[in-house]
Length: 135
Image (cartoon, rainbow, N blue to C red):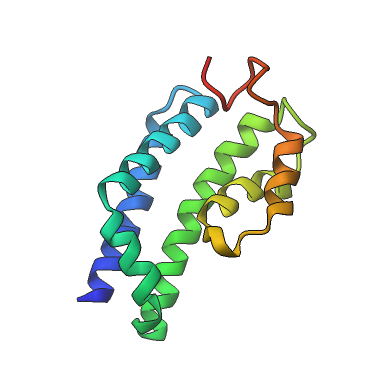
């Protein structure tokens, strides 16, 4: 039952993210859509998130690997959209594009402040008209 729940949720996130990206007019719209999609998921499913945090280690090795593969593919959607959006704002770097989505999926208590600070130092702040802050 646990495996069924976490695999289903992971598949739904990946499928939903792919739909958002495929229906977006451009990379920025895709990234904004992913943000809205993920926030909606997180606010609508806090119990599922808690179950994964608490019980993931109780999955079989095969189920853990499958959930992680689905989640990695979901993060890669974010990486691709982030890379497309920031390419014109900062020097292109796969590492830069990969930092943001990975940072948001890392548990807060284990996240290094230096990683977040490094990302923030390279992204335009709220005082500019640049994405990701709303106009």
